[in-house]
Image (cartoon, rainbow, N blue to C red; front, side, top):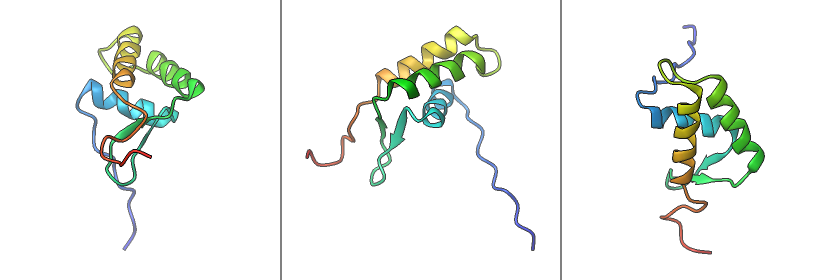
Length: 87
């Protein structure tokens, strides 16, 4: 039986879109154990995320609004997982 490429689910919220942009740019990563997003504190990845958001915003959203949402999401993410023990 031929294999088909699994389709990724549609992103239903602007916040979800912003998270996917940040992941694509490498600005955030997911805690492997708990699934929380963690900020990589990589200025180049952040800049890539802002460029992607401005140049390719979701339908009905301006580039400036998309960048603002990416910034809001990034500001809400810490650099550690809240469930992982402190090192």
